[in-house]
Image 1 (cartoon, rainbow, N blue to C red):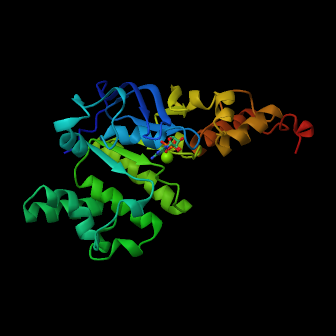
Image 2 (tube, rainbow, N blue to C red; image 1 turned 90 degrees about the vertical axis):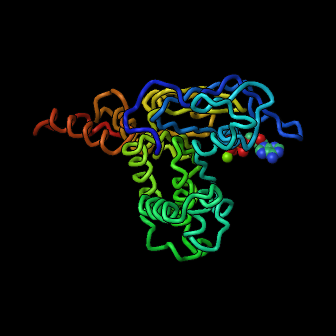
Image 3 (spheres, helix red, strand yellow; image 1 turned 180 degrees about the vertical axis):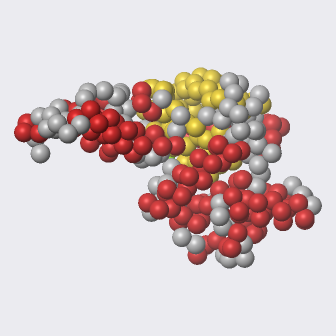
Length: 300
Ligand SMILES: Nc1ncnc2c1ncn2[C@@H]1O[C@H](COP(=O)(O)OP(=O)(O)O)[C@@H](O)[C@H]1O
Ligand SMILES: [Mg+2]
């Protein structure tokens, strides 16, 4: 089973000073170091070409660094450790079609365990457990290829969950999903982290999603890490965000406009709806039934 629900301080992933160039000579990672604790939820953000997908492939040894070291749960990601590492690190690719290749959902989800010659009754039970986790049990006999983008993503996730990973690495998991599927995936990932203690590492361009799902935001550019901190700290890095083609979450932009217009007291920007509601409630309560401040000066 994955590690328990308690978060603790041991670093599950230790990436030390790794560099990597593709065979054509393109340097995709440049002396990058990153530690991730067990149970953390880390969003990796940065423009296309920053090296996010390359970094992720280092975590289960699909690619090997030219220099530096990657260690997962105490195991250097290399050689005879690779099968153990790959059981610990579940990888959900950006394109579900790159991941799904069996003609039924059952076979797709069972694939990894079946290769490990797990007894049939244990295999059946684990496949059903994984499909229940992603709320897709009814699809067990269907072919994965005709499913919607959100359904394919959940099947890909179930096939990875079957291996009971400690770490889920998801490359732009919501990029091809409609808003409802995206919200469902976010709540599923939140419960996998909360209930099973699974460490989450995901790449995203979605600045509205990152503060909902991440404890930490890592900002990448040109194959190295430019910033690592809480979402609140990351979204204070305005110049860097601008340089990396990222913007503030919409709700923060709204609050910032209202603060600039004197309609909200200056302070930390809310990054999600819950924080915004709390801020607006405080401001409205402070107003009481007085005239709202500075409405006449508002620029809209
Ligand atoms: N197979 C490859 N061969 C050569 N260069 C590649 C290959 N894959 C990616 N790259 C280059 O490496 C850099 C990092 O790519 P990638 O890790 O995919 O970035 P991201 O996921 O942040 O968009 C990019 O400049 C990209 O063009
Ligand atoms: Mg990528």
